[in-house]
Amino acid sequence: MKHQIDYLALIAVIDRRLDELHEEIGELPEQLRRARQVLEHRQALVEETRGIIAEIRSFRSQAHVTIQELRDREQRLSEQQFRVRNNREFDALTREIQTVRAERERVEQELRNSALKLENLEAILQRQEEELEQAQQEVAELEHALELLSSNQSEDVMRLQEWRQRVVERIRPELLAEYERIRTFHRDAVVPVRRESCSGCYSRITPQRLVEIRMHRDRVFRCENCGRILYPGEQLPELEAEALT
Ligand SMILES: [Zn+2]
Image (cartoon, rainbow, N blue to C red; front, side, top):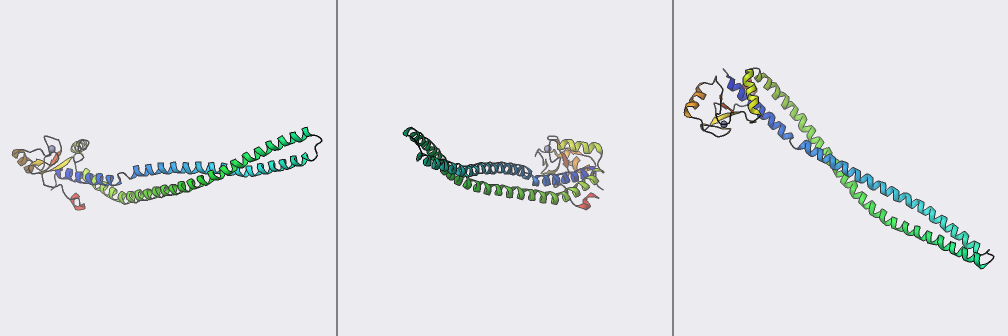
């Protein structure tokens, strides 16, 4: 016949396993959160670079048109110089031609500069796109790992919780409440007595009390030092379905 202490020990074993499962998932959600942040940041960088490149391309196509227009104008002004009536008109046209030419040279210079800039930016974009792809892969892998672990675990967790429920039904409510309260301080609320000591805090148990603990399995003893529930055995029971009956 099982006593309250035996059921408490079973609950402790089930809770330990549930804690372990929880820890296995551990860092994964946090890793995924960070990987998603990196992904977002890299996405923004790629978009920014693409935007600048588009601006430069649009400037370049506009500049080609502008240069052609300035050339045509220079051409027309040169032709007008053959039809001038005096030196004053000729000089005025010469100055206008110089202005138009200077403007054309400025735009041409800017166009050359933009070609170099574009080349650099395209190299940067390529690198940024590669880094973005890496980040996408990282997120996908972490999502997959988390999903896999969660679905494998959810079966275990459900089974353990079912067992736990069956055990809980056999424990007196005030004892269960006490167990839960101890667990807020010590994850291992039920510990075996080993080498005449509490295996939670290693404090000695007096021989007289040891005898009592072993004799009266129908009573629940707690460590006088740490308050954990003492299980009168070297090990907590194995977790098997039949252990629940
Ligand atoms: Zn103790």
